[in-house]
Image (cartoon, rainbow, N blue to C red; front, side, top):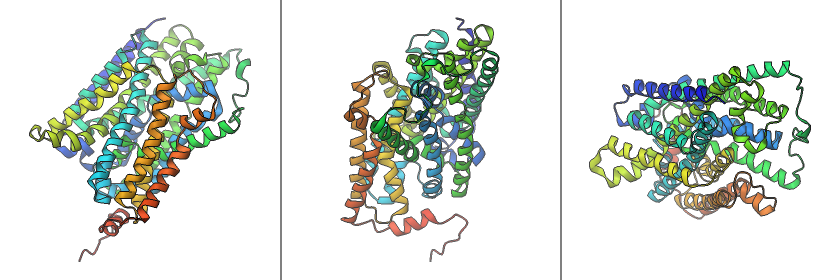
Length: 499
C-alpha cells in the first residue's frame, strides 16, 4: 500500500493552511480582530467559515462509519447537526449578535448581571471545547495511521502544532479565511471520490448491499424501546446542542448585525445540506463491498483502495485524506479560538495583567490546545462521532436553556440560571464521564442504565429547563432585564428613542 498520496495530501493541506493563515495575519491588528474579527465578516464568507469549522472529524469520518455499522437510524446525526442551525436561526442568531458580547460568558453576565453565572459559563465553555477537541485529535491520529502508517500520536501532534501557529498568530480574523477555504476543500474531497467510486461500482458486478446487511435500511432496526429512546435523545441533543457549542456561537459575534447573522445561518444550512448528502454514499458502498464495521471510523479513508485498487485508489485516498486533515484543522482552530477567548478574559488576562491582551490570548491558546492534546494521547480509543454526540448533549443541557430563556423570557434570574446550568451540566457531564471511561468504542452495552446514560439529552435537557424556570419564579430578575430584552429584539435599522 503506497503512503505517498496520503503524505503529499497532508503536507499540501498543512502548507495551504499556514499560507492562508499568514496572509490573513496582515488583517489582524487589534484585540477585536483576534476575538471576533472586528465584527466585519460578511454572510458569504462567514457561512463558509462556519461550514469549515462545523464539519469536524465526526462529519467527515464518523457519520459514514456509523451508517455502515448501525444502519439508517444513524442518519439522525447529520440531520440533527444540520437542523440545529434551523433552531439557531429561529431562536438565537440575530438576538445573540445584538447583545454585543464577545463570548457566551459575556452574554450571560450582561443578561443576568452576575459574576457567578459568568464563571460557571466559562467553566462549561472550556469543558465542552476540550471534549469536542478530543475526537478531532483522535481522528487526526487515525487518519495519518491509515494513510501513511504513521504512529497514532503523530496526527494529534501535527494538528495541535498547526492550530497553535495559526490561532496564536492571527486569531479570528486569520482563521476565518482558513476555515472558508477548508470547507470547499472538504466538500470537493468527499464529492469527487464519491462520484468516481459510484462510476466504478456501476461497472462492477456488485449491485447492492452484501448478504449480511440484515435490517440495515430499517430505521431503529430491532432496537425496540431502547432504540426508540436512543433515537429521540440523539435528536434532542443534536437539534438543541448546536446553539450551545462555543465555536459555533462565537461565529455569530463576527457578523456586522443581526440581519447578517440570519443570512449567514441560511447559507450555512445550504452548505451543510450539500455536504451531508455524501457520507451515506460511502456507507452504502462500504456495505456493497463488504467493508468491516470494526474499522468504521476509517471507512472513508479505506474505501477507495477497496473499490479501486492501484493508482486510482491511491489518488482518491490522497483526496479524502486531504479533506479529513482539513476537517481536523478547521474544527480544532474554531474550538481553540472559542476556548482561548474565554480563558483570556477570565484567567490569563486577569491573573497576569502585565502580559498585555495579545500575549494573554496566546498563552490561553497554548492551554486550550495542550490539555486536550495530552488527554488524547493518554485516553483509550473511543468512537469519533460518539464523542462529538456527547459534546452536543452537554451543550444542549446547559447553554441551550440559558440562551433560549435568556433571550425570550424576561423572568430568568441569576439564581435560576445557576440552578439550570448545574442540573443539566452535572447530569450530562456525569454521563459523558461514565461513557468515556467505562467502555471502548467497540463495546456495546444493552442494559437500560447504559442506554439512558449513554444518551443523556432526553432527561438532562428537560431537567435543566425545569430547574431554571422553577428557581427563577422564586427569585427576582435583574432590574435591567426589560431594557436588555428590548436591545436583543430590536433590529439595528430601528431608531430607538433613548430620551
